[in-house]
Image 1 (cartoon, helix red, strand yellow):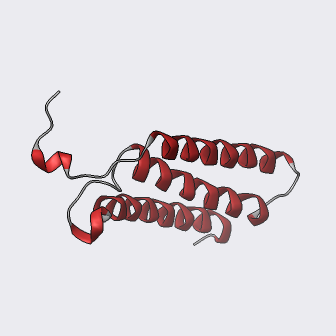
Image 2 (image 1 turned 45 degrees about the vertical axis):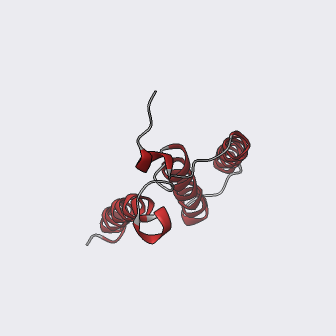
Image 3 (image 1 turned 180 degrees about the vertical axis):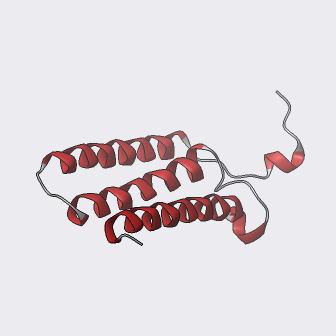
Amino acid sequence: MNHTPEHAEHDHPTEKQYWVIFVVLAVLTAIEVAWSYIGVDGNALVLPLIAMMVVKFLLVGGIFMHLYFDGKAANGKTYTYIFAAGLFIALLVYLIVIASFEFGI
């Protein structure tokens, strides 16, 4: 497989970093599953799950999809920021829809 010179300039995670991210994702997933069984309702249930989902989404998008390591501007973080912006827009729309059901807006 031939790599172009511009592709060779990119930093990529090491195998050790992949394993660390894997463990972090596995721990977050275990916490999410446990959280759903502890018996809390409403915002106490949903908000921590959304926060953990955002962290996992950014880790997978940024590291496993190499978005963090590709791109020239902003030290290679441009694609991760664009990907994250899409997530936050979707999350905002989700929260607005939920609020409209809750408050009859």
